[in-house]
Length: 121
Image 1: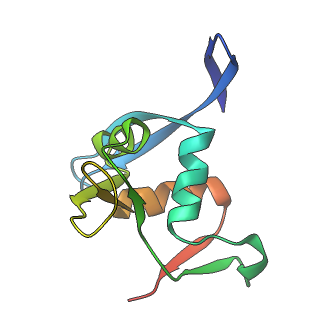
Image 2: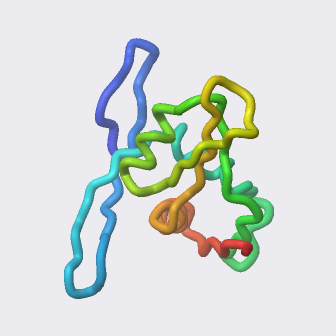
Image 3: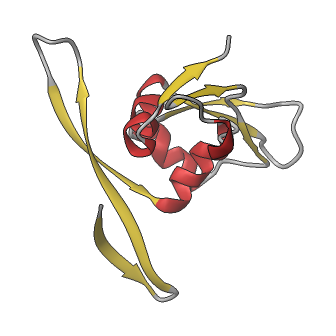
């Protein structure tokens, strides 16, 4: 974890994480910048509860986070490949959106939380 900046409201802690994308043959390294609020939103999205971790495994019983409009923080996760987004016409708000943690997002959370996340189908 490294601090990469501050705002007028105080220090914003950011996480730099090395991601490997591609197969074994053509690995691409990509630095991701994620703040602690984004990590908390990803945890909330999958219904994470530390008390439900058993034998270093967690069963993700949901994978959605709805917003009344486009969300800059979640859109940043989408751009970094850690989330996906779709229109959510049945939601409330100007232009409701539904965000989900992507496969790479689950890998990031597993590394960050030091657990295996099982995705309920």
